[in-house]
Image 1: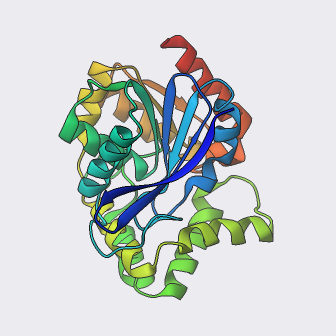
Image 2: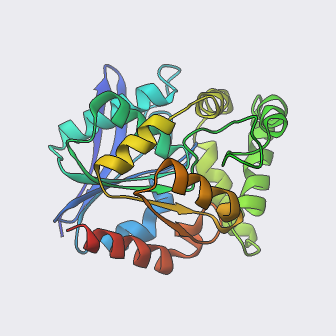
Length: 274
């Protein structure tokens, strides 16, 4: 099996860590807010048997360069294009999780969908905040998001507390073992708190409804949303992206907690779009 890890320079002095494993039709996995390639280990193991499977650490995440420059999703979309170009990847399925979906939609905003085969978008609304709470699918109430930014993401202890609470309350459905929670928090802390705060605000104030609609009209698209969002997310997406498939599974980290079921869902989608 072809297996390669590389650092790809996206601008002078800034390199992204990329794993490129297997052969076949390419899929590209993009982690969410402050997380790393490691969260997708079960997807890499499964899909690299039949696909060229690429997983990347965005800038200031994981093993990529920590930088004060470009910690926003406009830049992340450009970075993705540079990685795809460097690896000579065309006609890929892009799989974004959480804020990684913003990277995918920003790519579509800048470069269109001509070089994309299909999209899998994991548990992220195209617009994070709305005054239509209860009607629109959003990340959460505006006051709660503001409190998270103000109270937690301006010092290291706050970042640890924020991710720990989010992991146990939103990301998984079962009780985490102590070592599992420590691992999840450790992944996030590879991004310094002052960069995490910037990414958090950049993500919350994004609006990619137009790109979500355009993408689902142009190429096969599937959303996989956490079960706790289903009541709001499913009708919202049915209206905004009526051509997209929508599945529900687990919590925010469903591809880690329920990896076999998640991989089965994605496998069916990929097979249906050959």
